[in-house]
Image 1 (cartoon, rainbow over the protein chains, first blue to last red):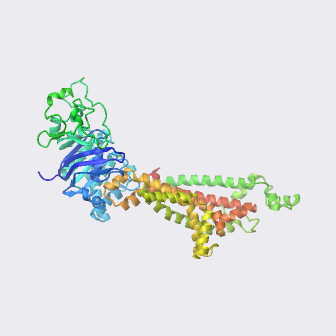
Image 2: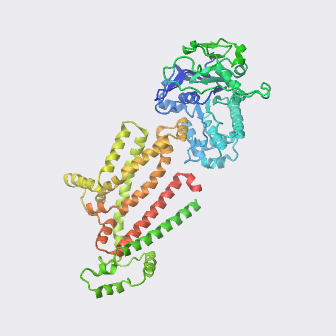
Image 3: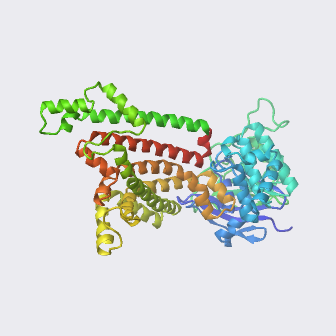
Length: 328
Length: 305
């Protein structure tokens, strides 16, 4: 198998207060595929993505065993070297379309500056490119929109502008951090369809962060499930939905109503408790306090099991314990 | 944009009208003007003559009406002490005060904006602490004292700058610096806090995700948003500088409007006092209006409303 476009191993992020937000995350995103990173709020999804982009707030420290993008070692890149990649070959869009654009500048100004910086293009070329990208993300009258300010646009339009802006320089990787969470449901569906279409047409690799398993089922090629700063299970989407291994993944899937599988009157599953705040130096399985199958050994280091091709999970339980399903 | 402008203009006119009334009322409240004009040795008869001659025997409302009517066309009457038209008296002094104020503001901004940006960019680090220390010292330092220190150092010891008077541009350097120092602490702190707030916002994260240079992030994306409160306060500070530079004008013997006001108050020269208060108030209102306009240029959201 050829090298992944984005190859992360042993990524750790610790905040100034001692909270270990990301503890040894490993994710590989292949060219042209959509990789979903799922998990509850506070499990370290966004922090992992920000760490890849080197956009962590001050006070957060990052380390990794391996952090490579398109064969380049991001750990040894200078700030300037990293800035040359960002917005150019790897782009990111965020959860908050209402506040992610600068209120003081027009859409056109904010879109063109990224192209002019990375491609050294003239104002005219950059403006043409911006209009083309706005049309590409389904915005009518792009010429008019270029002259408008963010406050004149709706949330859905702003997210489209963010996507168009992220794609200005034709990146290989797009990191999308819950891009539809702040939007209403009909707009969510439009934006997702747009992202999926762009991903297919442009051959983009997309790292999509979400907590919505419905979205995962629709768009993901691969899924990594995060819990308390670790990837607890990673698999092809079909495989994960068909044969979830980690108790947490199973719990997540039980929380989602699946047509045909759920009987009327039967309560949906839920996972009691909340994601724990894990301090640096924490040992063992992060899920053990909420896990129905927890055993004393779970406090020691947890082995990573393989459960078929390109499917692994972080748990003491042996693969294919489907007999236990009802108990979860 | 036009509606925004008209609304601000109406507010400005209302404020000016209020000040006009207050300026008139205050001089009348300070005692019987006829007695003070006639002087301490005047007889009752002299006072009555003065009262008639200056029209002070008319009802207040009539006096007010005629003063407003003439003030509206720039006629503030004649100074009792200088025996000169008030308008030309102020006209002579105004360039000195305005020059001093503008020099002061320019120096203040040239110091506080870079310091504020630097402190915010280095928040919590050494440079930030130093800047905060400077603002604290600046705040605590009386301006006349700083003026005297500068005079001794640059005027007398080194002989680089003239100590008093208004002959050349060099005369405005030291008073300009002293005046600037009254505004630097507030403007620096405002720039710093505005920048810190801007730098922690989502659009700055976007700018970083776009791979923009650090300079562009600081100066283009953050400063423009941080500048809005700074502009408003800078306008007020310039107003203070124009109206409140009495101390500095007397320390450096600059005979500007502040000095004129001080002289006239002492001499009970009420046409001058009234006119100075009015002119400064109108300038103040004008500055606030100008600040609103600058902010509307900086922040498009203000234009739509």
